[in-house]
Amino acid sequence: MAMTMVLGLAGCADFSGIHTRAHMIQSRSLAGIGPNHSSPGVFPQQHWWMAFGDAQLDGLIARAITANPSLKVAQSRVVEAQASAAAIDSARYPQINGEAKSTRERLSANSLYPPPLGGSMVTMNSANLTGQWQLDLFGKNRAALDAAIGQSRAAEADAQAARVLLAANVAQQYFNLARLQAQQDLDRAMLRQREQTQELVRQRVAAGLDNTLAQRQAQAEVPQIRRDMAALDEQVALARHGLAVLMGAEPNATDTLVAHLPTATLPRMPGHLPAELLGHRADVVAARWRVESELQGIQETKAEFYPNINLSAFIGFESIGLSKWLSAGSRTFGVGPALSLPIFDEGVLRAKLQGNTARADVAIDNYNAAVLNALRDVADQLSSWRALQTQLQEQMAAQAAVSSAYDLALARYQGGLTNYLNVLTAENAVLQQRHTLIDLQARVYDLDVGLMRALGGGYVITDGPRQLSNTTETRTAPGIQG
Image (tube, rainbow, N blue to C red; front, side, top):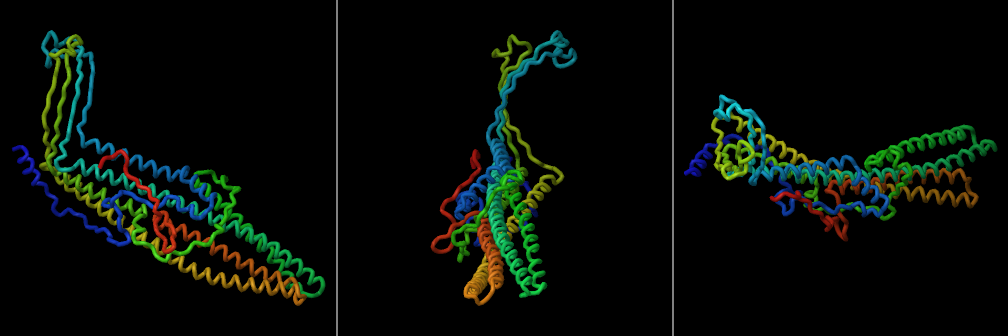
C-alpha cells in the first residue's frame, strides 16, 4: 500500500517543456570517444618525443612534467575531483555515527522534571549509535555519483591534455632555440666573410682597382651583420628563459644549454591519418565527459521531483547520574522511515531543472567547439606541412644553384681567371641560403610536434602511413566503484 502511494505521488512529477536544445556533433573522426567506449580514457603512447633521438630533449621534457607548476595544478584538480566523487559515492550506503556526552547542568524547577529533581544539579549522560540510509528508489544518488565520476574523468583528461601541451611546448621551444643557435653560427661565419670582403675592397681601392663607393658599401655590411647578431642574441636569451620556465626553473637555468636540430632524416608528412586518431585528443575526451556529467546532473534533479525515503535508527544509553548510565534500564532505541515529497515549491525544482538543462546545453556546445577546433587544428597542421614541402623542394633547388655558383667561382679563382672577391660574393649567397634552409628545417620539426599535439600526443610512422602507437595507457577514477 505504501509503495503504491509512493508511485502514485511520483506520477505527479512534471518535466514538461524542459529539455536540452543542443545536439552533439557526430563525426567519423571521433570514433570511440566518451563514456560508452570500452575504456574511460585511453591515450596514445606517452613518450612520443623520444622519436627525435635527442637525450637532452628527453631530459628537459621529463623535468618539465615533474616540476611545471601549471601541470601540478591540473594534477591536483584530478585528486580533488576524485575525492569529491568518493564523497558522493558514500551517500549511497548506510551512514552510522556514534556520540557520547556527559553534561553537568541545573534542571529547571518549572519544566519537564518535577522536584526534587527539578531545581537540582544533575549529570546528564548519553551514549548513542545513530544510523541512516536513504533509499535511492529513483536513482538520485546514482546519478549524482555518475555526474561526479564524469567530472573526475574530465579532470584526468584535462591533466593529460596539459601533459601533451607542455611536452609539445618544450619540444617546440627547444627546436626554436636550436634554430636560433644555428643561425648564430652562420652569422659568425658571415661576419668573418664580410670582414674579409671589406679588407679586399679596401686593398683594391688603395691599389686604384676599385672606387670608394664599393668600399662604403662593404663597410656598411659589417655593422649590419653585427646588428643582426645582437638581435639573435636577444632571441636566444628569450628562448632560454621560456624553456626554463616551462621546466619549472628560474630563467637562468638554461643559460649554458646548447640545443641541436635532429641530424636524422627529416620527418615525413603522413600520407593518411586514421579517423579514430582525433578521438584520442584529451581535450575532446574531457569535453565529452563533461557532457555526460551534466546529463547525469539532469537525472539527479529529476529524481528530486519524486518522494525521498530515509530509514533511520538509533540505540544507546541515557541516564541522569553516572551510577546507572550503562545499565539495562537506561537503554534507548528507535527505528522508523521518513518520507518527504515536494508538493508546492513555487517552481523551485523546475527552475533548478532548467538550470541543469542549460548547463548541459553549454557542455554540449563546448564539446562541439572542441571537436571543430580539433579538426581545424589537424587541418591547419597538415596544410602548413604540405606548403612546407613545396618550400623545402624549392629551397633545395636554390641551395644547389648557389652552391654550384660558389664552386664555379672558386674554380675560376684557383685558375687565375677572377679575383677572390667574386669567391666571397658567391660564398655570401651560399650562407644566405643556409639561413633560409635552417629556418625551414626547424619548421619541419615544429610542425611535426604540432601534429603530434593536434592528434592527442603521439603517433608513430610505419612502412606505410603514420599510425597510433600500440603502447597505450589507461586512466580511470581510482577508488570509485561505478
